[in-house]
Length: 509
Image 1 (cartoon, rainbow, N blue to C red):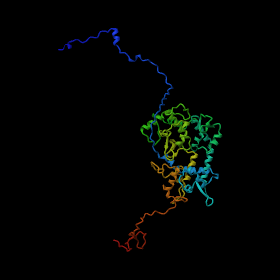
Image 2 (tube, one colour):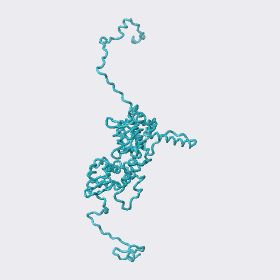
Image 3 (cartoon, one colour):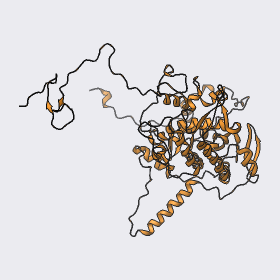
Image 4 (cartoon, helix red, strand yellow):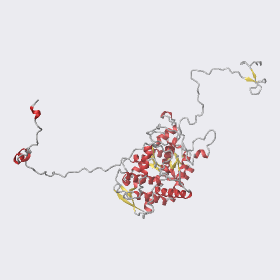
């Protein structure tokens, strides 16, 4: 065997001499002789990047088309054009205007094609009437019924001036600086039911509430008095009423089982389980009043979106028809610190709002104020508008089989439904055109320009002749029919005798 295998295991090494240990402990650092210079400060101060705020990502909710809300926009297409014509007409002295002067407002009316205006006015005989003064002078004016409705509307707006003042005060109280440009308020003038010249009437008559100030982009309206009694939103009032109603039910019912805290969603709203859960979590957040100070809320946070939803809800509650255009709300982006994607924020909350893509611009509805396509509570201005809609729907030519009854003319609660209300089409045929062009194409039946006759009306209005289904090349062939005649030669009788085609009687079997 190898002798190395027989050696004992090596023992622990003996302690080295201190000098030898210091010599073999570590190797020399080569950069020890280099001079050390402290780092000099930079010649310019460094700009530290600010950390972006933490944004709470809101889950998207898919928008679903709902026909009842779209029908509200669809049925007001004709009314929208008629009201524009009426506003131009009432600005004239004695409310009479010539057709030649009306031609200057084609662009304001959205009429880009060259068509005779008399044909358009004759489409609404319940609103406008043509006055002939000479051969080359044609004028038009309102019918007595339409003029009566216009005067009633002016009288009603004058009577409800106090309500208009309250709406303006609440709108200013919700803003951040308690002042809004008058030009922006004018966009909501018709929706809030304000008079036409509200700056010269309301804003100047109540100096204890308003003051006109000069801002960077024009004159603005500033609030001079804060009223805590007005700083109560419509959502808070509705919540108090619901609590009182539940308290009454709790007192009437004995040994009522425990009720889980479930979020009530609108009936008919189709949502996935995840969307319903996110909406329920958003509803469980503490309510932030639209009249509260929101300067400390961080943009993009869930609290800021909760406040923005409350502001939109309150503005829609102040409108006459509980709806407005989305563009009208975007004008107040600075005053209420709305996000840049305001439309997307509204769509994310289908339990409160509905956005309709019908018409030229998108409209937003307050869902709780509507049942199907009708308002739950209607004020007098809405009733006057429904009467005006009934006048717009008066046909130029009466029905052949009898006149339309008053119920058929007014529809449900005075709202005339178009024949296309029940259609669920994904795209409109005239998408991209204005409402006025849609109206003209709808009135013409979708015909092209070559199908029109340059007369008082459109071609084919008085054409009552039945269509000819025979071909041009083929002539009608004579068909022999075996007739049944009586013995006395009459065709009408009970005892009919069979005969041959040439008229000879045929004997019975």
